[in-house]
Image 1 (cartoon, one colour):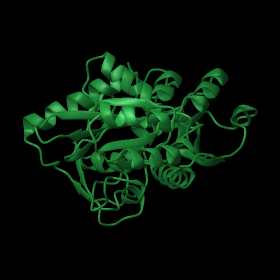
Image 2 (cartoon, helix red, strand yellow):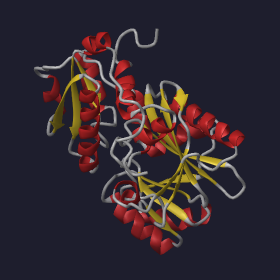
Image 3 (cartoon, helix red, strand yellow):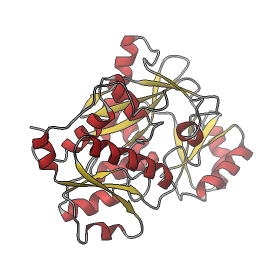
Image 4 (cartoon, helix red, strand yellow):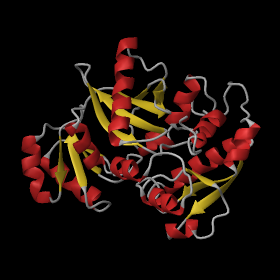
Length: 324
């Protein structure tokens, strides 16, 4: 189930009247973040799907100063397929909003908040949503107290990177120091949280609706960058393997997380389940991957939505009357 674009759902053609209202659509991809290569794949897949659906779309590899993207725009709206810093953290969203150019996905505040894993967890905690116990770590001097206060094993992650970049599982103070130094080289903010042992699930959201949950399993220590984008032995379960009531509970938790962060139109929420059956929120992704290994297209397909229809529905929300 690795190629989710070429599926057996009937070919999708967007309504010509809708296509006319879209005008010319720029698909922003690439960027300068650590997730550049994944973003290029996502962007190309989105562009191809939009064009297949009849939309007048073209690709833009965004490099360097983001302000230049709106200096003399030859497009009417933007499909954002940028992952990571600059494209997913509220920066391009603020620039496009200031220029009056409609764009897909979450607005500036939700994008910036979701990109900051630490502050997202503060919001979850403040709203009474379950998330693993955690600490911000600013120096190796804190290793001893963190190992004492939190229960190992621990997950160490740069607070602003996506695609599982820089994440390490650690058991001892020495491992924590080493993992902290690695993460701190990528980010001045490092998050340490208790490691939840158990199955991982991901729930994709589309227009305030939770799509079928996906259960993830891999031979890797966790669902890391390689398992996400390169490996062919990652196992995706749809149906996810939960009892129906538990899946509804999982989907509702994902919707709650999406809403408290303030997200819009589409995204993905990653959740762990412990041995007692309790669900724990990890993070919210506001511009999830749209590659041939990606989870949102996979969940959409399970709901009977082709890749082409998915991207058109995301784009549809950029129209002024989208929520009428």
